Image (cartoon, rainbow over all chains, first blue to last red; front, side):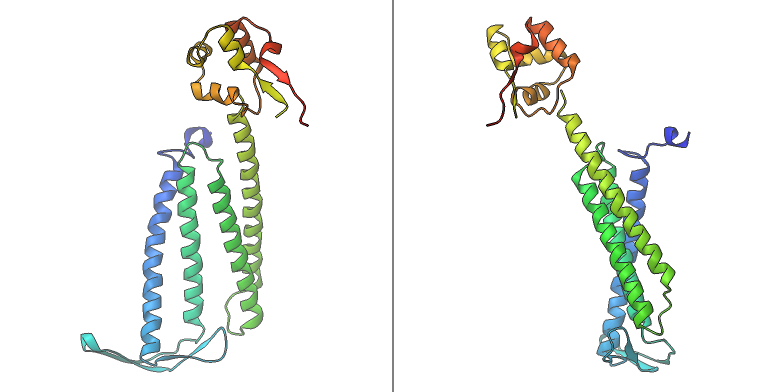
Length: 186
Length: 69
């Protein structure tokens, strides 16, 4: 009943709504990602942050002193931030930005009348790879970092979504094959 | 492809242009072109019937089988 009332693909459809929604989300998260990178850059420049030899953590001086000379601004304080948190936030933000980027392109493809296209299969494949990489990184964090908040179940869920997306992109490839045969049937 | 569509030959015999055939069949000239140039994967019986009615011919006059060598 809902399916017959709601236009899912094509112009002025649910896909159009999600296209603009994901585009907005992408713009917001890009803003935060750039802000995060700027924050980290400032931290390194002011020696508030420093890399240690570990791959997943960096040492952060609990007492920090940031000086932004052009603005004649000085910030001092104490913080109790676990060292791996900036990397975790950066990694998570990057994953969401990449996912939203692909989703924007996917929903834009769904806005056309022909949904079975090579582009849709390609974007679903990218999403599958993204989730697979996120699952692997999640498992690595669980195994490698004692401070990590990630649990095994998050990784398993990401892996399941990756597999599901992989099968869906194969379905779309089959659909593309059938559609092209239909198009060439006179 | 082993199946060859000899539509051009029949059109020449009946002194008809592709555009006119397409119009009478109710299909686009691009679709008819797909058929003529051998790019079509399949043809519907309804399409074949329409061609035979308009060109007053048999399916064998339009379709020929030549196995790949």
